[in-house]
Amino acid sequence: MNRDEATIPSSNLVADATPHAQGFPPSHPHDASSSPPVFTLFSNLPPELRAPIWKLALPRRIIKWTRNTGVNTFSTPKNSTFEVCKESREAAMLYGEYVNVSEPLRSFISDSCLEKPVLFSPLFDILLFEPIWTNLMPVLGAKITPDPLDSLPTQMRTVRSIMVHPHYTNERKKPAALFEKLPFLEQILVAADEKSVGSQSKFILGTVYDIRLYYAADVRKRIPEQESRSKTPFVAVGCLGWTGKERRKMNHGKQDTRELVAVFENEAQMKAHLAGVREEEWRFTQELQLKRPVLKLRFKNLEGGEGRRIEKRVEATKVDGAGMAELPSYSRGTGQAPERPPPYVETEEVMGI
Image 1 (cartoon, helix red, strand yellow):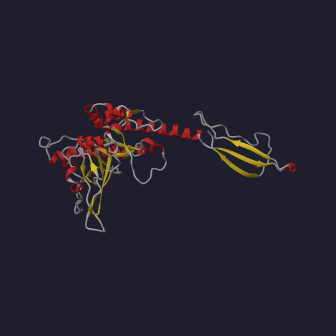
Image 2: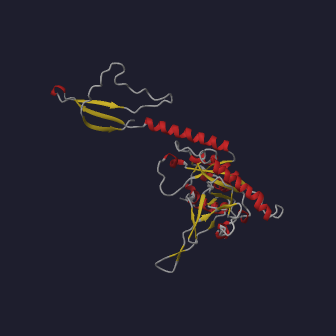
Image 3: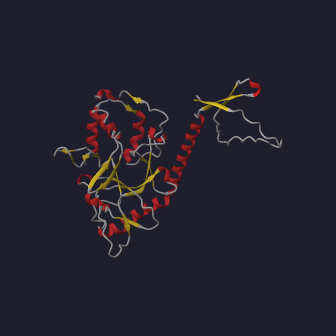
């Protein structure tokens, strides 16, 4: 696709401009029920207008960092700006300041090194990793936990935003990772799944408190604020959820492509978001109820040897929010047992429209 063929969904530009400029995602995930309109005149705009639009279109991806057997592994979702056209790729590399963090993989066939490019933007991407939580007071004779940031590639230490896994304990903990080694760090988010912000809020907010305490006590004790190159970063809860078409799927496959859908500073914000998620799930359930298939049951009446078929349509029960319909009663004061149903012959499934 060349530059003249590039089209931009106009609604995405409006929705994404504010979150990317401020460094925070929108309060609610994108709705997959309707397709956004397409701005077909984008290629007619002058370059000085197209360039900042490409910048606003840069996604805030969650880059997962794990370390296995001494090798760094980075799991990165797709970057849409790299796949639109040449102009979008050039603008992304310019404004995102992407760096290649791939580690060469040696081929088993030859001595040549095969590189799988993994591009990381210290300005837009969020680095997710396990900081290794330890006790506040070191245990006498315990083995010293190594700092995972010591193995982080040098070109990634200018990262602005990181996300860490919470510790699910009632005890106060501190990270083995010395966050002050990231001098340009502006934001630390504690990862929380969108469906668990209610049940796990105690541990998640406890981790937020521990990170703030870590900066107030440990970091300021080692590095006085007047000597530190950076101030205490913003610490909050980062809510991960599915967006787009994936939001309505039951099975999402092996790759985790959840995105940052909200940022919380307190429990009230978490409860408000969870209430919205529950309402969205309820609406989705009602849609499934209306789309349930209609069963067409065929019975055979054997009385009198006629052998004629009796057809009965069983439609899905519709729930209008006022409650389920009352279940029928067989006897209801008559004391008579229900009639014996005719023998079952065949069942057909006809999808309702």
